Amino acid sequence: MPTADRHQLDLFSTDDWPTAAPASRPGQAGDAAPTPRPERPPSPLHAPSKPAHPAAKPLLPPAPPTDLPPGARWRTLELDGGMLGYVLRRVRRKTIGLHIQDTGLTIRAPAWATYTQIEDAIREKAAWIQDKIQDRDRRLEQLALQAGQWRPGGRIPYLGIAVELRLDGARPVRYAGDPGSPAEGDCLFLPLPDSADPGRIQERAQAWLQERARIDFDRRLRHCLARARQSILGWSLSSAQGRWGSCNSQKRIRLNWRLIHFAPALIDYVVAHEIAHLKEMNHSPAFWREVERLCPDFREARDTLRRQPPDTLPLI
Image (cartoon, rainbow, N blue to C red; front, side, top):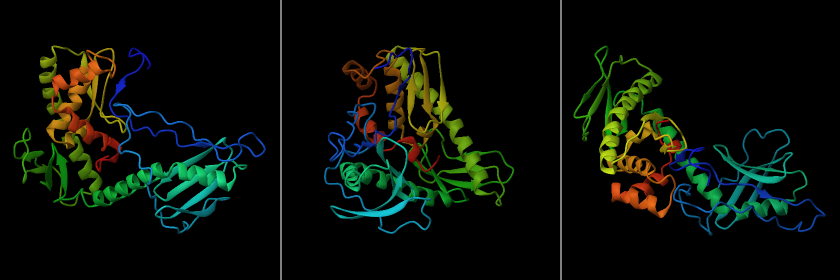
């Protein structure tokens, strides 16, 4: 592992594992089915959001897109559970690359890779494809919901509670309820006219959420630091799309402001995770014992956040 002096310790990176399967040139030794590149073993820090499914059934409608890229071909492959459609592009590269986009699956393969090699690579990555298709579907659903979210009467998650948005003209922003302990039925009044467009509503709502994140996270950090008998040089909010928090060897902590959407128990776990790094700049058994000492019920929160990386939240 790289030394802590040179790298921050990130909480839940969402970087994809390698998705390319190497292909052998015809005529070379072993030019039958390619051997996939070994995947990184999961760890508490870098972990797949869902377990692998040996019998996963990736299904994409076998209908070609309306406009194929120049030189691309539409192909289908029968897999266990249904037909998979994909776009095949021949490119200058040494491996077979699989890419899931909103429009579907695209395969980028060397010109000399055979169809058999390409299809073997797809079958080898069937579980990964299924997971990515599900992630794509969830993201598209969230984007559809978001279209109607930033309006009077729309609802946003705040500390695990759905808070209703209302517009209040030129009056200062105000929260109807206790912002330190939100409850069902609370409302956030924004200083905007009824004619405000969704982008403006989103901007003002997120500014309020970030302000509340600074207040709420600071209180939780102070409380946990006192329990841990530790100190830090400072902390700040982040907008990282691939991590919930980080701590470096200079004793500086960063917390993703989007944590303010979640119930307090999840925020407390991230805070405890980063503060535990002040004692153990690693993810050893001693580190997890320190996390448990600071946050006894951390396992459920950890598992929840592994299934919900920052870039899948509807509020991006």
